[in-house]
Length: 285
Image (tube, rainbow, N blue to C red; front, side):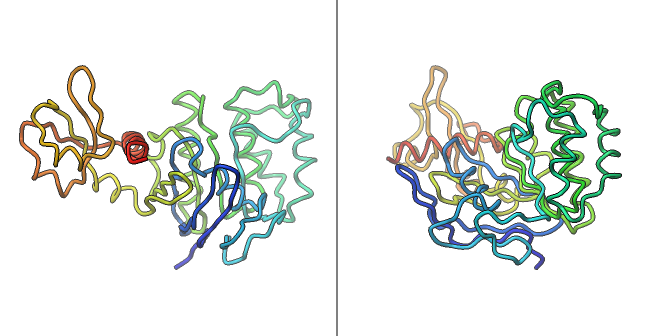
């Protein structure tokens, strides 16, 4: 098994929040979606992967090498919601600033991506649109021999055309089966399109980590008239919610035959899974 990322029983305690034995892995050749509600622990986990924070216990390995605090991994490319580059830098200044950190920096490749993305080298970072800033980060990430791309909400706020272009680039990146992508985003439609695996984190704990198809097939959406559902069945509905036109929630697909044909059973989306799971956990508190 060629794992690019291996996370084993990762713990990190903060006031009011903790990662609790977070474990998952991602193999080369695949795109892994990292999802969960705000405050679930996604960013903390990503910081541990990048060596920005030191976990209290547990281990993070990238390509078999343990990540230490402050360690710069040449084979990790990072694309964030907002770039770390100085706003007054011109694009040529970005290259001058980042290239010394990478022994495999490829200036020819970098400028090829700039040309492909229609990014002018004389422009300042602050003059780029949001989508162009994401593409600039992608150009940097793809120009130093990175084996892993870590993306933290890069497509939020982008138009559908720009998002589709970024998603296509990620698919191309893993197509040789030597690279992997960990993609944290709230835009689950992107993940439904390109992700192979999904890791779902909630309240600092991994709730699911496996293939996207298995997750989507595991649950179904149920809705109907709340007066027609027995209390013992209502308790089995995850994220049960009543509204002016009826009720809705989620159940395991294997349980669907045990519910009356009066109820509407239909496929569930990743977005709905996150919503129902989060609501179900709150209802249990």
